[in-house]
Image (cartoon, rainbow, N blue to C red; front, side, top):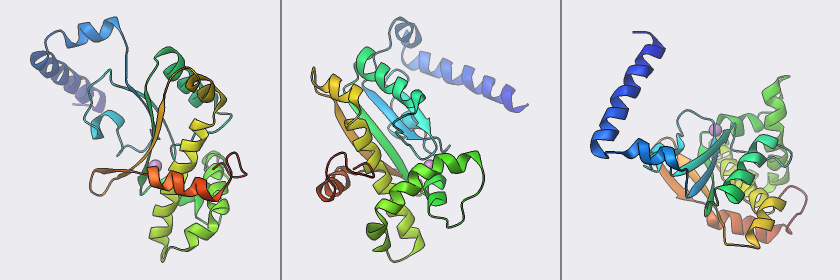
Amino acid sequence: MSGIEELLANNVKWRNEKERAHPGFFQKLATQQKPRFLWIGCADSRVPANEIVDLPPGEVFVHRNIANLVVHSDLNCLSVLDFAINTLEISDVIVCGHYGCGGVAAALTTEPTISLVEHWVRHVRDIAKFYRDEINKQPCDLTKARRLCEINVAVQVVHVRENPLMEDACKKREIRVHGLIYDVADGLLHNLTHTVEDLRAHVPSRGIGGV
Ligand code: CO
């Protein structure tokens, strides 16, 4: 069986099991999309949004890119954010990073490569430069990379919170923004609320560097 044939066979099996457990599941979903969460995560294949929080189709609106970035001029991400908060009216935005992120690790290498990905990773390099002192408190390269994964999530959370679309939507109703980090080594998610608030305490809102 070829790769695609295997996927199609898997799909039929999955669909039939879902329909058996929840009769009418797909018909109900076809009539409306009303997810509770917007998930902004890394494109890494080991961090599938719905699966790691055990939520079925229809519950999570998802945007993923390398290193889970919310770049101020990224029309893709901003369109997703706009649609999620203003049309779907989701109640919670989740920025989810993960330990072992290749995009974050690339930002700590000293020799930039001449590639398209390097241009994207430069956003994380900027964060690494800005929080150099915090990262250098870590004892080894592994823990430095882990700390940058956390800081990166915190910065992206602030990018979401301070986005003009978001600020405008929050005048009308409460929308919570959360920073989470996933450990690919044990499958557990951790809340980074404290990291977000700690970093904010050191740098004025809208300061250079993001947080
Ligand atoms: Co990653």
